[in-house]
Image (cartoon, helix red, strand yellow):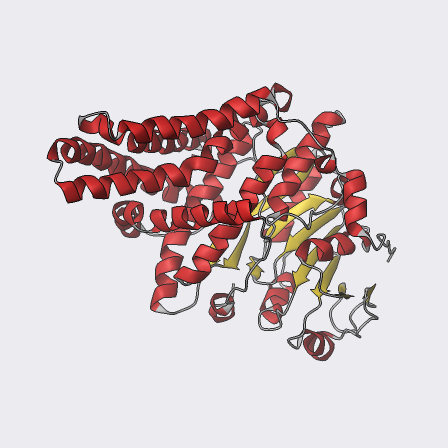
Length: 483
């Protein structure tokens, strides 16, 4: 196998090659859009003390209207999924390598690797990017997978028992750095990143490979993930809520793909055209969400250099991934996700409202500008509702209750539609109709508020400039049944 080596100073390489590191002024369009959202919240909140009747809850009306518009958009753009999508056409064969970035993942690596070895279309290479593990990962790889420990910073010889398996042994430097070094140590056309806590279904790699082979312009594709929590009562509750959240999110991604605005590629299971990632400087270790940030950089690079690169979500590429199973873990995850989202939104503020990026610049990124304040709108709306109830302001509560009732009915209809559609598109069933009815009634006053609370914490994280990941339990993946 041909081996490449990146320079030791990966951050220097990133800064030299990435447009993200070129200082950009904040354009007027971005200032007006982001500033307008902030001003809107201030005006609507002030209205709670000025307006009467249902308009005293104007911040809630805007919040409900915004969410409903996104549901309608997703419904319209995913309507085609009620019929089978055409199979990808033939193309030039492409080599595929899988990188599993692992730090202290000995507990789940055997299950993850078993799923990779069980693929109907085996990857040409599987590289375990061991990011300074101290938990017995080294002993596991040597004992159970026929690998000989290489010198630190080097790639091992191929496994004697598992064809194509290699061990990249690294000092602890974080996931992004491990992925970057692995990218430089392989030469496959297509590289897939798979988290050590993610189990691929047997046809997953075949689906991703086919998507890249069929579309030479495709530079990043995400698989479809289903969350798995542990078997505790709390774990099952969090899994129930997150399953529907993932259904809606992946359908939304497909909707944005349809208009050329897909930005969110889940690094837990994603495929990339290796040369494109190297062209833009690799993964960014400074970002809390390096997978999300990378897509912005790819899209900006494509516009600057006249490339017609595309991104996609592949319904046939399915996997299960560990999800938070308790309140603390969930809030920490959402804190990091939202803090990283704010980082990226700020770094790429020049793209917001820029027509050169098509629907991405004119529609998707302005929507994301509103999303920066969505948790503030949501928590404010809930706080005002509780206040009106406590004060017995019936003239406000009565019409607001009608609005909330209509919204719950819309959510229920979309729940049922999305479950049916998702089952047809990506398999399932991930959730039954009865569970969907219960979720539509309970979720707005429970799980949705937790999401907003985690996002508000993300604001604190972003403003404080913190960049730590935190530790997550892997019990759900270990305990889950075989695929």
